[in-house]
Image (tube, rainbow, N blue to C red; front, side, top):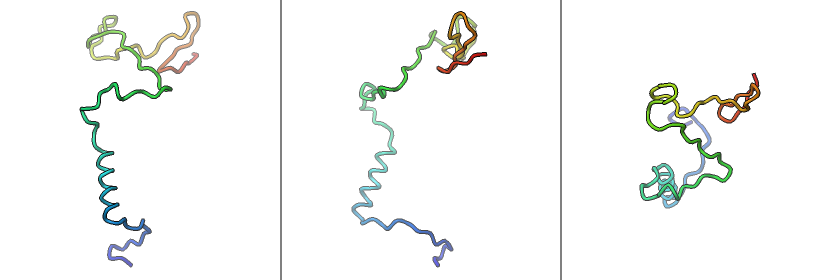
Length: 94
């Protein structure tokens, strides 16, 4: 039994060169994106939804006067005639 009191299976140790390569790849994967990469190079997936555009600019909503609130109304009428409402793309019938 080991000195720590735990006897658990573990992966075999890597050779020194492979361990260094593994640690280097781990550091690269965890590092933030460099400032040299432009946002143009980071494209959205073709199936991703397009981001919603804000309904107004600035911190104050011109319709309600609310300061610091959401830039779009989160709940909206789906149809002019019915009682269907949408919230983040999901439709609910009350």
